[in-house]
Image 1: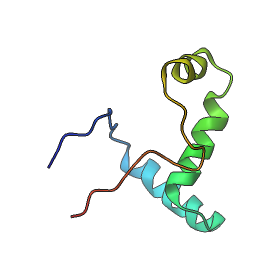
Image 2: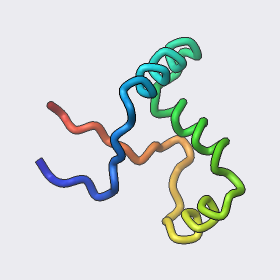
Image 3: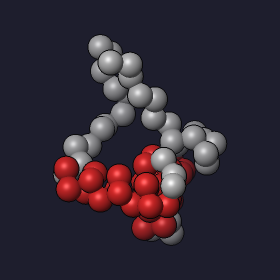
Length: 70
């Protein structure tokens, strides 16, 4: 399997579980929920500005993640 091009952090199991249940409650994909939560938390911070200045433009509906087939 090829190595990911970007850092992929390991997220605590209980956080993933909470995200799963919240996404089900909101009837939306987990990736969209995570993107919305992180955008709301980071928007306006210096790190957000740096990331946007150094990254190519990306469709806001595209998470950038592509699941690998098992």
